[in-house]
Image (tube, rainbow over all chains, first blue to last red):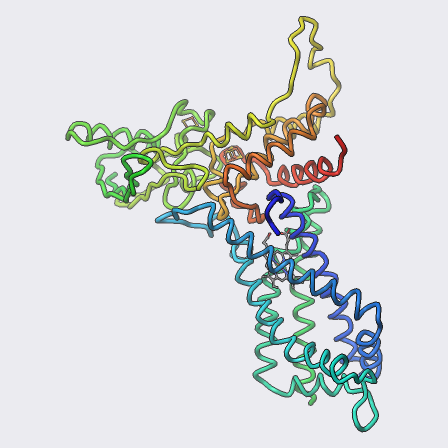
Amino acid sequence: MAKGMTSVTRKILMALSGFFLLVFLLQHCAINFLSVISPDTFNEVSHFMGTNPLIQFLLQPVLAFGLVFHLAMGIVLELQNRDARPVKYAVNKPGENASWVSRNMIITGIMIFLFLLLHSADFWFPELKVKYIDGDMTGMTAEGHFRYYEELQHQFHNPIRVGLYALSFVFLSLHLMHGFQSAFQSVGFQHNKYTPIIKKLGTIYAIVIPAAFVFIALYHFINA
Amino acid sequence: MNLTLKIWRQKNANDKGKMVSYNVTDISEHMSFLEMLDVLNEELVAKGEEPVAFDHDCREGICGMCSLHINGEAHGPDRGITTCQLHMRMFKDGDTIHIEPFRAKAFPVIKDLIVDRSAFDRIQQAGGYISVNTSGNTQDANAIPIPKADADLSMDAATCIGCGACVASCKNASAMLFVSAKVSQYALLPQGQVEAKDRVLNMVNQMDKEGFGNCTNTGACEVECPKNISISNIARMNREYLSASMKDD
Ligand code: HEM
Ligand code: SF4
Ligand code: FES
C-alpha cells in the first residue's frame, strides 16, 4: 500500500483519514448524547442509523475502510521511521524538543485500536449478527419497544467496562491533542492568524469530545 | 573546569564502534565546544593515541559542518546555535558529557563523530536551484517586483546551512525541515516558479530514496535548528507538493 507513494503523499493521506475520523467522532458523540437528553429520540436515531441503507452500505464500509487505512498507514509509518535510524543514541533527550503526545502517536493509536476491538465486540458485532445473520431488522425487543437504549444501559452496568472505556478515552484525548492540529499542518494549512486558533480548537476538541463520551458512560452507570 | 567525556569512537564505516571515556582538565568556560575537543585531541596526540575525528570548518556558525549530538541533543543544550558556537559555560565543573555522531540511516558514520551528509547534496542537486542563462543581458533580479513579506520569508528559508540537526533531532530521522527550507526559498520568489513543479517532486523523491523517515509533525527539528527554520516551511512544501501532483506536464 505504501510502496510507490512518497513520504509526503503518505503524510497527506494520514491527515485526510484523520480528518474523516474526527468528523465521524463528532457525529457519534452527538448521537450518544441524545441518550442522556431523551431515550426515545436516541432510540429513533439509532434505529435510523442502523437500518438506513445509505448509512449501512455506503458510510459504514467507508468508515471501516478509513479506520483500517489509518491504522495500517500508522503502522507502516512507524516501521519505516524506526528503520530510518538503525543505530540509536546512547543518550537522548527527546523531551527537550518535542511533546510526549507527538512522539507517541503509535502507542496512543494502538490503545485506541484495542478499545475499538472491545467496543465492536460490545455493540457493533452483536448488532451485525441480529440484523444480518438473524435477519431481525425491527430493532424491537420481545416486549415490542426499541432495544437500543436498553442495550446501552446494559453495557454500562459493568464498572470494569465503564473504567476501561474511560481509560481508552484518555488515550483518544492524547492522540487528538497532537493529531487535530497536526492534520492541518500535514495538508499544508499554515496561517499566522488561523493556525493558533486551530491549535486551541484542537485542544478543546481533544478534551471536550472524549470527556463527553466518558460523561455519557458514567451517566448510564450511575442511573442504571 | 574538569569534565568527563564519553565519546563515540569508530575506526571506519564498517567498525562497530563504542563509547569511550576521557577526562579533560582545566577547560575554560570561555572556550567553544570544539576548542574543548581540540584540547582533548592535543593530549591524545601527545600520548600517541588516535585523535577524535569530528567535522568543522568555519567555526563561526555559518557553514553547517560541525554537527555532534551532545548530551542527548543536536548541537547540545543551547538554542539557535551550531556546536562551534556552543560555549563551555553551558556546562558545570565535574559534568559528564556524552558526545555522539548525528544518527540516521541516511547519514552513515565515516569515522568517530564524522557522518556522511552527502544525501543532502543529492537532494539539492535534484531540484534545489534555478536555471539562469548567462547570456550577457540577464535581467537584473532587483528589477523584478517581489512583495516584501515573501522576500523576507524566502531569505529566512535560505538561511538553512544544511547542517542536518533537523534529521538528527527528529525521532523519525526525517529531512523534511531541510528539504522544505530549500523548496520554500525558491517557491516564494518569481524566479523559482519556472521549475516549481519538478523541483518539489524531484526533491521529495530524492529525499525518500536516501532513506530518511516520514515526518509526523513533532516539531523537534525547528527547536534544534541553529537557524530557527520554521516548520511552516514544511506546510508550504506539502502545499507545493499537492499542487504539483495535480498539475499536468
Ligand atoms: C485505529 C487506531 C489508530 C491508530 C493506530 C492511529 C495511529 C496514528 C498514527 C501513527 C498517526 C501518525 C502520527 C502523525 O502523523 O502525527 C496518527 C495521526 C492522526 N490520527 Fe490516528 N490512529 C488511530 C485512531 C485515530 C482516531 C480514532 C482518530 C480520530 C478520531 C485519529 C486521528 C488522527 C489524526 C487527526 C492524526 C493526525 C494526522 C496528521 O498528522 O497528519 N486517529 N494516528
Ligand atoms: S533546517 Fe536547520 S537544522 Fe535542518 S539542515 Fe537547515 S539549518 Fe540545519
Ligand atoms: S564549523 Fe561551521 S557552522 Fe560550526
